[in-house]
Structures are given as C-alpha cells and as structure tokens.
Length: 523
Image (cartoon, rainbow, N blue to C red; front, side):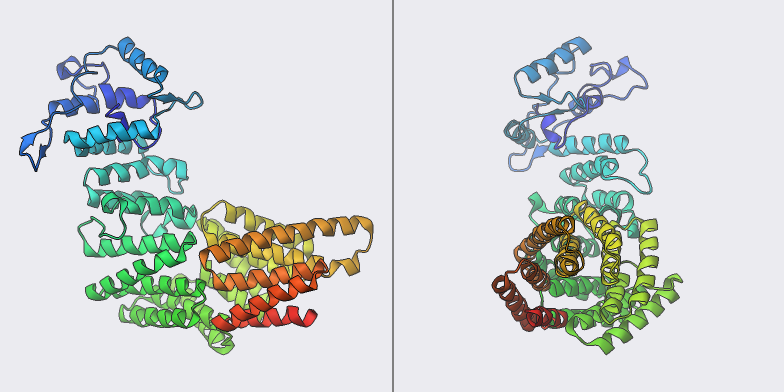
C-alpha cells in the first residue's frame, strides 16, 4: 500500500508484475537473467536516503514483505486488500485505485521513509516505457502516460528532465499540441503546477534555466486566462515581463505582452490592451522576429477594431495579411488573426471578403487540427450566413461551433459560440420571422428558438460575469435585450440594453455602443 500510494492515477494490472514484484516474485536477481526486476526489488537493493536533520538512514516501509511471495500468494494478497476495501477494483478496465484518505496515510509513510524520490524516479521509468512512441496527433488518452512521466519526474526532483519530456513529447515543440489541437488548458495547467514546490505557483518553478522559468510562468498565466480566471492570470504576466526584460529576451517578452493585451481586452481595459500590444510590437522588432511582429500587429488591429478606430484597424490587418504571405506564403491571415480580420470585414460590410478569409482559415485549421480556431471559423461563417438570410446553413455552423467549444476548456470560445447562436435565435429569427411565418407550426418552431435563445444567452452571461469578461457581458446583455423584445417584454429589454450601453461607454467598446443603440432604437 505504501508503494501503491505513489501512483496518483488508476493502476493497471500489469503494474503489479512490473512495479511491485519482479516477474517471478523474487528479489534474487540471479533467478532470471534477462527478465527485468520490479521497482520494489531495486528499491530493496538500495540504501534509503539519509534524512538531513538526523544524519542517519531511515528505515524503509518497502522492506521485503512482497519479495518472497509466489504468484498465487500475491494474487491472494491483492484480493484480500480489495475485500478490506483498501483497494478498489474497476471491473470495466481492470484498474485498481484506493480511497484518497487511505492514499494520504500511506503516502505520508512513503514520504517519511526517505525513499519517495527513488520511488517516483522508478515510476517515471515505468510510465516512460508504457508511453511508447508518441503519435504525431495524439489524443489526451495517448498522452496520459507521458503526463504521469512529468509528474513522477518532478516528484523525484528531476525538473529539467520533466520539462524536456513535456516540451518534446507532450507539447511537441512549437506545435503546442495540448492547447492548440486538444484545447486542454486545464490539463496543461495541472502539468505546469508540478514544476512548483507543492504546486504553489506563487513560488519559483524548480527548473534550472531562467528562460524556462519565464516560459512556465507565462504558460500558467495563459492557462488561467483561457480557463476564465482572468484576475488570477494578471500577476503571472507581470512577473514574466519583468523577468524577460531582465534577461533581455525580447522574443519571449513580446509573446507575454501579446498575452497581456489579450487579458486586458477580455477585462474590458482597452487602453491597457493597446499599450501592451504596442510594447509587444516594439520588442518584436527589437528581436527582429517577423512572427512576433505579425502577431503583435494583429493584436493592435483587433483592439483598434474594438475601439472603433476603423482606419487603423484596416491598415493594420492589411499589414498582417502581407506578413502572412511573406512568412508562410498564405494568401490570408489564419487562426486567431484571420478570425479577427474576418470579423472586422463582416462588421464593415465586406461580407464576401470575410467569407473568403474564413473559408481558407477553416481549411488550414482543419489540416492543423486547431480545434479552438475551427470552432471560431464556424461561428464567423454562421454570422455571415445569418446576415444573408441562410438560416439552415447558419444553424449548422452555430451548432458545430458550440459542439467544438464544449469539447475544449477555453472559456472565451464557449462564450462566443453561445452568444452567436443565442443572438441569431433571438434577433435574426425570433425577432423577424414572426412576420414571415405566421402559421401555427412556424410559431411553435419559433417558440423553441426563443427558449434556446434565452438558454444560450443566460449561460453566456453567467460565464462572462463570473470571469470578468466585460465586453462579452455587454454583448450578452444586448442579445438578451433582443430576446426580451421578441417576447414582448420591453421593460426587461430596455434594462438589459441600458446596462450594456453603460458597460460599452465605460470600456470604450465601440460596437457595444452601436449595438445597444440599435436595440434602444427598436424599443
């Protein structure tokens, strides 16, 4: 049970032979030539760590209790532990777990034994063997053994090795598989926490290189931001910017400032967002990094769009598109900058151009498996179809966007997908279709859409207010105003529209002011 406590995930049946015993249930290594001894066997051959404060070897709870057991005796022991409910056996997949309180008790024994680091080092190797070769496009399930490798390596004190495994095999260098392809920000954050003492992210990451410390802190901030925990992300970005400037790592500092621009935009601090984007661009040029320059310009252009500075936004997106062509030989911006450009084009009445940009963007993102961007492309195409009166196509795109958004842990993408479908149901269908479709069947259909609008928009508003997304809050309230208007509830509609207008004025959100004014005019 002491050795079992070192595992934090369900234990596979093959672990009993590989980890606990050695193939033949013996600690006499001469009995089997090429067969690998179990972890317990090797631990018993080592002297326990010396406890620094006492200067003496600590007795290990991993003494040879299991070493002499034969297969039948060992299986009987496991069965008795299950009977005593110290172990739990999952019949579906054959794995074993234990109650958290039981694990905590035995884990304390392991920690005090002086052999915890050795044990975790051995479990790291076990999971490394279990992981095998990493697929080019892995699933979370396929990455699970590698995630355990990182955990046990950190518990063994091998933080640099853990980071290298994460970078090369989980993140896969600049492909960022975990967040770009799988949208698994919660999993990524859990991994990052392993690099801090006891998971305390207020302390320093325990890797040796200062640049790696900076990267880990930035990743923590990025995960918190995308999980909707905006305020908690702020200090991480601030720490990283100072570290990068001290290191004169202008490339990493530019990336962090781009993330800070995103964070401030989400919080409705558009002036601070613009300032961060301007600093990001300055440092990108200092680093002579064209990709950083392109991405910083995209942020500047998007913030200008949100603030109503249309000429600056237009000129900026034109430069961004040229840089995409220069760097990647792509005709249009793709991923997030492409989505922003299309949204800008849609808003200023260039729907055909917006559709071309988004169609190419969707194709690239599907090839690269950028699930977040795929969802957002469907959302933009839904908006374009809705404006063109193509309700069936719009519904298909909105449903696809929302389904993908629910499969990942990016809060902003989920809010946008809910907002888009709810706004369409409230305004584009419920608000106007009654005039076109007066028969009873159509009225019932519209009633269902009306209920959907309130459901989607109230969910979006809840996420926006909980996370502090000020611009999304304004958008949600405007869309709810349309839903109330369609339900013949003018007082509720006016209340939501006025609250949205106030937020838009406080934040300088140009489109929020225009959209709120449109609802109030309709009232």
